[in-house]
Amino acid sequence: MKKIILFLMFSCFLTAQKTEYIKLNQSIKDKFSRVKSLTLIDNRTEKDLGTVTYKKENVQLKFENEDLKKYVEDWFANDNKTKGNNNDIVLLLEEIRIDDFKNTGLAKAKVKISSFINRNGKYYFINRYNSTVDFNSKLTPNIPRVISVAIETIFSTLIKDSYSHIALSTPIAESDLHNYEEIVGKNIKYLTVPELTNGVYKDFRSFSLQKPEEGYYVDKNKKGKVIGIKNREDLLLSAEYVFGYVEDGKAYRLTPVGFLEMQKDDKGYYVVSSRLELFPPQNVNNGVMIGVMMGGIVGGMIGAALDSGKAARDKPENLSNIYIDPLTGEYIFTK
Image 1 (cartoon, rainbow, N blue to C red):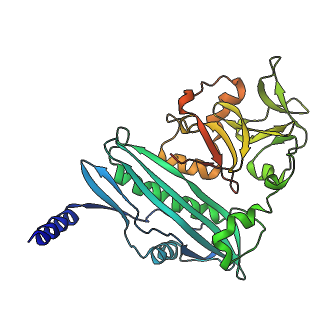
Image 2: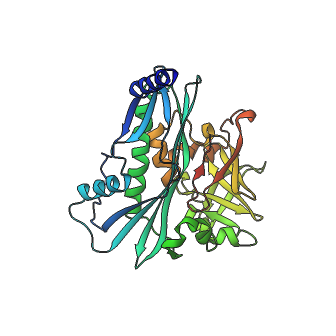
Image 3: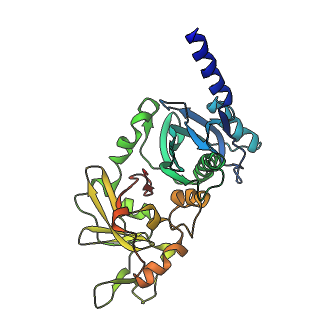
C-alpha cells in the first residue's frame, strides 16, 4: 500500500512539473550562400538540461525536439534553401547545464559548443562559446523563458559567426575531436612562445599570432598611467580597435576599467576582475552580452576607460580570476 501511495505522489509531481521549451526559431540564414551543410555532433555526457524555480514551481528546460541533431540540422536546412558549394560546418556540443540556486532567485546556464569546418574529413576549429550566463529573478521577470532565449541566441550567434569566421589551420581527425583544444593549442603561438612580443595588438588574432601593429605605442602620463594608444603621427587609436599591449614580456588587456594584466598560471591566462566590471549591466543585457562575448568587446564600452583610466573598480571581495579562452580570447565565466 505504501508503495502505491509513493508511486501516486511521484506521478503527481511529474504531472505538476512545468516545462519551458527551447525553440530554435531565430534566423540563421547564410546571406551569401557560402555554406553547403551544417551538422551537429552531440557529445554531451548529460542530456538533461536542468530545472529552475519560477513562481515557486520547478520548471524543466527542454529543447522543443529532443533529437537535437535533427532539430539543428533541420533548422539550418529550413533557413537556407539556397546552399553554397563548399563549406561544411560542424557543431560540436559538449555541455549545456542549467543550475538553480534554491531560495536565492539566482540561476545560471553553462554552455560549451564549438564550430569547425570539415574539409575532406579533417576538421578545422572556427569558434566556440564556452562560458556561463547568470540570471537574477529580481531583474528577470520570467527566468525560464529568458534562459530559453539565451540558449537559442548562443546557438544562432555561433552558427552565423561561423559562416565567415576564419578557421585555424591545424587539422583534426574526427576521432580526435574530443581532444581538439589540446591539439589546436600546441600550434597557437602566444601559448607556446617562451616570452611574449612587446607591442600594441589591435585584436585577439594578432595577439594569438604574436604580430603587434607596426608604428603604434602606448602613451603614458607622468605618473606612468596609460592614457591612450598612438601611432608615429601622434594620432590616437580608437578604443574599438585595441585588444591590448605587451610590455617587458607582460600582457595587458583593455577592459571597461582600463588595462588589466593578463596573468598566467597552470590553468592559463586570466585577469583579476568580475562579471560586473567586464560587462557593466547598464550597457548590456543577457542577449547582447552573448554576442559581445563571442565577438569582442564593443568599443563604446571601453572608450572612457582608455581615455581616462579612472573607471571605478568593483569591490575587492567580488574580484576573482576570470580565465581567458585560449582559442578565442573571450572570458570564461564560471559563476
